[in-house]
Length: 358
Image 1 (tube, rainbow, N blue to C red):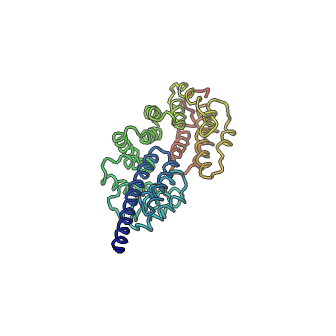
Image 2: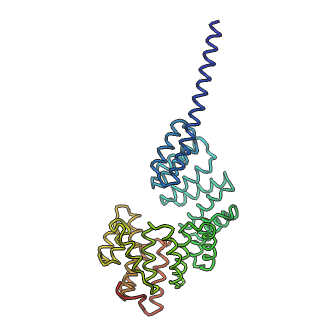
């Protein structure tokens, strides 16, 4: 009888434990799903909280570890992103998603070769992983290896013919190679596939600018601002392009002047409002973070050059555009426009553009 009682008790305990594990499993999936929702909204801290709850309930939940790593990467916390992916790979050494996210973190840290090694592994374990091909292509583009990047974008598009991001990224690579016709074809396709994404509009506008078809860049930048009214950099760029095209841009400047003029890129607006001179703008571009500072100085020098150019200070404009070329990374958005302005100034005998009084 005692044996029967003990056996029955053990059976009951096992059943209860199984039930708790089922409940924990369901709860962990709920937390994971909530984390995904927060991450998609850009609420990365809240996403991390939910993923952490899921992981506490199930420490072997690989997808939760990977997605928490993804959220950390979006917060520029690359080392914690890598730690989560490392933990996921200890549990499942073949998880392609973990290799992909870890590669993203390495790439964002500037460790491009280590990133490519991880993208290679992601693709090895999932040969149809179009996202990994696209990400590896972007890393090759960051290294200036545009032909290899285009090969990866080609493969991503073969695997997913409706992959707007891959078309946009391939267009960027063609643009960087100076193949503007092919770039425009891919930007057109990217915009057709995802008309709500402003990055393709930005890219197509840049090609028009590089082709010296400056007025043709205006509609794309206007459309981008309609999609993203909070995009202050886009508003500044639209203002400058409209002025360069000889169009009235007062309304654009008035609208962006109502926004924050202290945090970056607000000081650039202050330059065009004549509330700040170029020296003060370059001082405002400084940052404790070296990467941030270089990016802000690149932007500041380009727009100081445009400010000088329209005000007919040609020699000063040449100097600032040359400094922009020397400061900007060749893969950054404003590097080629700065170079194009230098070439145009030389070709046109230092001719000024646009109206005076800026």
